[in-house]
Length: 195
Image (cartoon, rainbow, N blue to C red; front, side, top):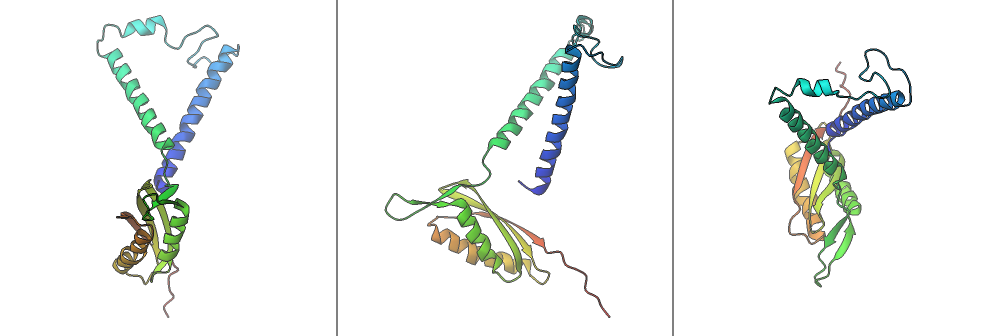
């Protein structure tokens, strides 16, 4: 998950949690006998959220309740989609290495990520590298973030990464292919003083 999506995820979770905490806490407080302000949605302990008069007011409009139900259904589907996205594993825990005997061996995903990142950092013009393996253990995919030095040529770094680092990783694990998504960034550096 990229940094922006992670930040949005945290902000949405914080706001939803705050809204639910305030609303739930207020309903609990009123239910326990606290007197709410005059503008609040509850009048007292035995009040309901949607009164019979409010429900009957929209009965003549045939579009209102189907629209409300459809909007709530969409919200439930979005919540379920978000929940499944949170529960889905991001990183690959193990990689199946072909040993030639038909059984194979399991390699820790983090170990392979660290080796690939270490080799990528030795390439000319690469300051930092980060590798994350996703997919299935028999067909992993790599997400590579490279931070390039100011003097680096992006095309050269990308070529070296694919022909050297990723090719060696694919061959050493006995994989048919190792598709990769590469994101390049420039390293921040101070401006040089010209005299």
